Image 1 (cartoon, rainbow, N blue to C red):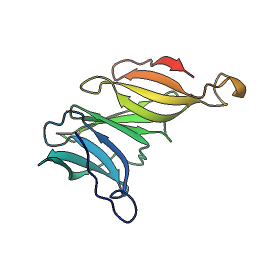
Image 2 (cartoon, rainbow, N blue to C red):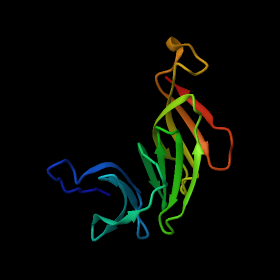
Image 3 (tube, helix red, strand yellow):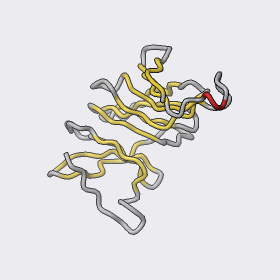
Length: 155
């Protein structure tokens, strides 16, 4: 579905982040970070509309998000944690702590209920590698039930 967003004087409707479900169903089909607030998005009458504000976990500063099948995944890259939120109930899960020796910048839901996801990270000079050996980008796979993530690839 195409997403039409009204442009305002300070950019597209004050949006900083947006994640939309490819197959909207139910009342909430996406998330947006708008003017510092986490907003639920719904697909109605052929367009995306704000369907309410969600109370985010305290001190969270989201830097990336994904949304699939009624579940949102939100990355707080500064703290290296991922939260999940159920769109219908508003219930939060997590946080799941990501490896601390990486800087985390992106997230993508893998499974229909967003229980597995990919995260983009980059090693830091404080990691187990010398500064010149630190990969520029790493792709990691995570699951809510598993304790150990898998590093899939690095460039």
